[in-house]
Length: 453
Image (cartoon, helix red, strand yellow):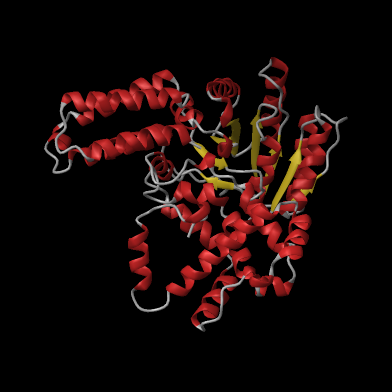
């Protein structure tokens, strides 16, 4: 997400940091770049105008002109204004009510609404330790009911059955009673979607809302639809008392205009981001962290949170102990590292959150995430002995491994080369101070063959 905007603003930020003195001319040039970057990112025109005007007003103020590092001061202003247009951070869901707390999820068809209900259910169960029930009142798309049942099983939450011959409001009334009987803390309602906003759809979702009396009414927006997403959010806000927005498919949206426009245009806070296809690819929206990513300054806090939640601490400690004892790093260990990286959003997800990477690494979209899957498949196709002793992988063994993993010999050779380079690097890490010297010597350059060292 924000790939295009990040590239443009990162370049502008770098230029501004190098300015020893700000003048009206270089501020004007910088703001022209900022304006173009926002428009290219499909940010709503009124939002762009207001943003640029506020930055210009603050940039020409005494706090910047008299600053020791005026370029950095201007970057800080741009960062602050990005945070401001995306809204206040950390607005938690209102769950402090008599159980069950009812959450109604609305949106257009194809926005990823049903999948989002499954993701939110898993998030509430794992992160908030809530007992969750889900129900679908989408009687117009029978497959939606089956889909939600499958997602409920995957998320480990309760599912309230429904059928296409029932009225949506009757399903909701029954689900609320069932949630009480099952002592559920939260009831998530997946409402019906349409390909476009129409009167019948709005009337039905209003009846569902009146029956459910939800504490939260969340609108799901496909971030890839740009300005259309903002327009549909405005239409739903007129029909329902929305309390927040969930942006989906942000991993496929290089522009990010919806995220920068929706709060300013609708006045509704963005609560969550859907960051991938996996059920756990779902995160709380933090405007300050997103602004930091846009300006190429990374997001270390989210990176650490992801690591704490997804990295297998047992395997990490086992590898550290193995290396301390002087035992070799083998392909089993290498596969574990690849799988850990994959669980944290892949290479693109990691680079997006690492500070100082703008300009030194290719754009996340240019990184082939399938490469990780291919590498893991090749290691899985090896025998235990081959993983422990990679030197024995030659000739006929290579042909067997590539046939079993659906790859080819040159791809396997690249994997073995990358593994050898990583193995050598780990050996060099022995001895006091050597790792620090190595990191300084790397100078932020790319590791060999695109694999993060």
